[in-house]
Structures are given as C-alpha cells and as structure tokens.
Length: 370
Image (cartoon, rainbow, N blue to C red):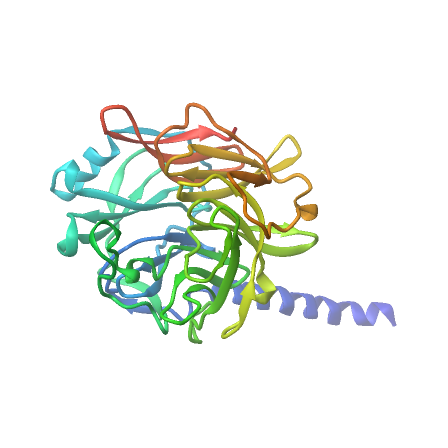
C-alpha cells in the first residue's frame, strides 16, 4: 500500500514545486512592456527578481520596473570619489546640477541604483543610474521595460503653502519612504485627509488602490499628539514575534506600528519607544546583526549616524509625556561616518553610503557595519 502511494506523492510534490516556481515567476508576469513616465524619482526599494520600485512624489505614484538585473553576484567593496562629478560627466552637465535623491542596492546582483535629478527646479530631469560592482556608472534605459504603476488616491495638494522660509509644497512629501515586505509595497508619506500622515500597504502585483491608513503618534519633544507630520524613514523589525515598522520622524521620535494594522481606511496610533534628539531629520535607516545582536543604523541631517541598540525593545515603555531631549532606546554616534546623505545595506557585513566630504564633493563607498 505504501509503495503504491509513493509515485502519487512524488507527482504531488513535483506539482507543488512547479507551482511554487510558477508563483515566483509571476512577479513579473503581470508587468506590461513600454516606457514608464516619471516627473520625479525619489525613494527607491528593491523587491524580488530585480524588480525596482521607484517613487514619483510629483505624480504621487509608485512604479515597479523589471530591471532584468536578476543574476546573483557577490558584493564587492567599492569607493567612488567625486560621484557627483562622475554623474555629471555621464549625464552631460555640471556637478552643481546633480541631485542624488536616493540609493538602493539590488540584493541579488549587489549593483547599486541611484535616483538622480539632472538640473534643479521644475525643469529637472529624473534619471535612473546603475552603479555596477566594478564601479562603472551607466544610465538605465527605460525606453522598453516591463513595468506597472500604482497611483496613490487622495494625494496632498500640489501647491505652495506657508510663507517665507516656511513655504513648502505638500506634494513633495506624498511619498517619503518605501519598502517591499511580504508581497506588499509599504509606502509612507502624506495624504490630503484630516489625518494627513499615512502608511499604505499595497499588494503586488498592483491590482488594488493604494488607499491610506492614517497614523497618529505622540511626539515627546513637541509634547503633543501629531497626525500631520510624515514618517521620514522606516525599517521592518520583528517584535514579540510580530512584524512591525520602526518609523522615524523629524526631531527624531522612533515609533513602532504593527504591520497587521495597516488596513485601508483605518486610523491607528503608533507606540513611541524613543526620543533621539530634536532639531534633526532622519534620512535613512537599516537593520543589521553583529555579534549576535540586532541594531538599527540611522543617518541623520544633524546628529550624525546613530547605531541604535534594540536589546529589550519588546519591553520598551510607551512615551506619552513631554521629553526635554532624549528618552527610551539608546544609541552611539558612529565617528568617521560624517556627512552621510544616503545609506543602504550592501551585504551582511557592509553598508554602502553616499556622503559629502570636506570641500563639498561627494563620495560613494562601502563601509564595514559598525
């Protein structure tokens, strides 16, 4: 009896493996070939099979691009001095007309990708640039690629608000950070709703609207609850066996949100677990392990690169009262990592950064995780 079942079991297992393979292949099956349109390229994030998610804050949309860069390759240490000058040479302009909006590493090929603006102001042209593991730069042609796009409903107004130095355009913060997590693209930013600060979790391939979840936090440095300040950067982190987002805001509250609560139309309140210092804007954040411990590494506008200790994060108390400066999780500032504007993880032992050095020039380099 058992022998007679063996061929059937083998067939079932084979069908199951083929189905799993087909499921993996389907990540690009629904993408259409053509030329995606961009008004701007901002936050970047990689998904499976070399699919790159590109945020267009001006259009309030996220586009998935099959880069074709899906061949596994080992990471290589890299250093490119004057990366802004080299980009200018590649794109036929001058270094002062180059703005690097974001950096993301393809976890398969370990090539780095840059979202670049050629020029400044409303006439700036968005360009996607690949930095190969051998240090060569190349503009990525988007004339004929497989892609799909998710437009964000209820985006903030595309208009100047405020006066003088406080004037801003809310549309520029329609998307502040993105990540691909367990089959969904998680998007932080603003909407035009009363609770403007939002998180969106959109299933991929894109088939449903990216309706927002409104989020509220208690900001200890400001001594109040806030619903209009956007998440600046975030990372996925498991706490108590449940997957969360750890989200950082301007003036550096660190807040945790259960990913299971990210549902369209919901209003949720995050748990503030740290105040890491005011007068500061978080720029990028990654998670890594070293010597059996897990850390957050966060680049900032004015407080350097923080190595944040996550030990006992599951026992962190919620901050619900005013804080003068710092409270909650502790950190150390990593010396020698000054001027970091962009940060991503290269592999298990190294990060890759873009930082501004003395004299104003920029360097792209890999650095050992501290």
